[in-house]
Amino acid sequence: MDLNQAFKSTCKVLFGQELGELSEFEPYLKEMMLPFQTAKSYISGKEVLLSSPLYPKDAKFISQEEMEKVGPRQFNINEIKDIDSLLEAANEQRIFCGNKIFGKCDNVEKVDNCVDCSNLYYAHNTLRLRNSAYTTYQRESEFIFGVSGFPNSKYVMRSLEGIGLTRCFETYYATNLSDCYFAFNCSGCSECIFAFNLRSKRYAIGNLELEKSGYLQLKEKLIGEMAEKLKKDKRLFSMPEISFHGKTREVEEKKIPESPVPKKIEEAFESTTKVILGKERKSIKKYKDWLKRRTFNIVKVAGKLGDPAYRVKSLPIVKDINPERLASLKDALESSSYHAEVSSDTTLSSLFDWAAKNAYFSMEFIDGFHENTFDTPSVFSSTNIYDLWDTTNAKNAAYSTAAVHSEYVFGGYLRVLHSQFCINCYDVFNCKACFEVDCSNYVYNSYFCHNCENVDNGIFCFNVKSKRYAVLNEEVGREEFMRIKKILLEYLNKQLDSGSVREDIFRT
Image (tube, rainbow, N blue to C red; front, side, top):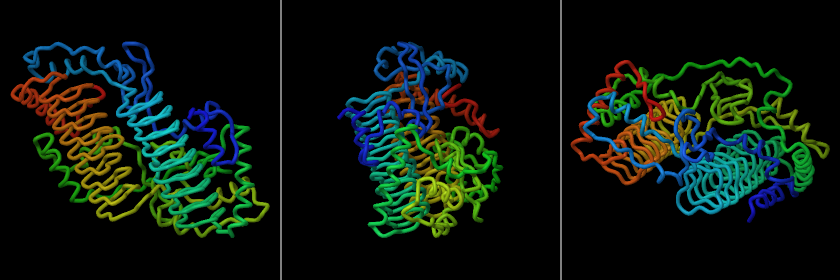
């Protein structure tokens, strides 16, 4: 199917009619993508899309298909006598790769970290997507446009953060919804319009459950209003506009002090630094600024209804929600009893006005068994977690962004998946005992590596596969590798005595 036709089909499913061409909605749909970066290949001038915004603008970039054009740098391992010579050689080696495609992909364009996808445009960090565009951190989905962080979804537009949507529009922080429009923090609901903090509800408008026939009649009217505005303006209002309606945008944010660091986190950090750096580091708070240098910006604020709430400043759209409308998960759920006065005369405008006065927004998601988790808004079945954005089936992690099926994770952006003992790692999968490793899979006991796969014991390796005891992309044998590793660790530990390391994978 042509991608433009896939978009039109999705519009017909959601709104009962086509709304126009996909290209006309690009600015509107693109707003939902998590941060990324574009650059020019230093070899060809081709545009390169990278799934992280962290790369220095003056760095060298290549597209994946150009990797073979970058010949191996010839160097003599004996030239590496000290840290200065190692860092100088690393700067010459540093080339960042974008437009990365893996597995079986067909008809994909402007993508990075794309695995087993077809008919996909403008996306990054995707797995098994079909007939979709303007999507990030998304897997196992099809017919989605302007959607991020919503795996297992179908026929969805303009939605962010959760799992399992079918036929939904403008839906945030939700799980297992179908046929919902303008929903926030709902779970197990179907056929809901302007729904906030509901659980297992059906046929609800403005949080008020209706008889099926009355609901369907009013739904047709409201969906028709949405469609007409979208056809005319190529966009519709969003949650931040609801939250600020009639109010000034200059709202003072009342921050809440962080929780004390749990003892289990201190112990986990000591173990992790011993494994990776050869020296235990105590008092993790001393290293907070260094570890959080590139993580998501999460702020704990005074919730409107009493308990502390969270504001996630690094996510699109929701970062702009009025802080005065934020609430804890508990308080938000209790507020769900506030409902609109609904009749056959109810309009999109009247529901907007109702939500502006009565809706509260919680950016917390708590589910499954969890224990000893603090200052983390999204927690699913995790233990010993402190100051992250999202943690799923993880344990022993702190001052990071997202730890998923991982343990002993500290620092990093955005996601560490199926990995153990990582410090400042970025979008890695199945990595162990790694320090400053970016966009890599199956990498072990390695330091300062980018776009590597099946590398065991690597230092300053870029865009290589299947290496062992490698420095600057060249296999040097165990003895020479350990000599270089000793120079590097002595340098890192000396810097860490003062609480941070100046260099990272992005710049030395």
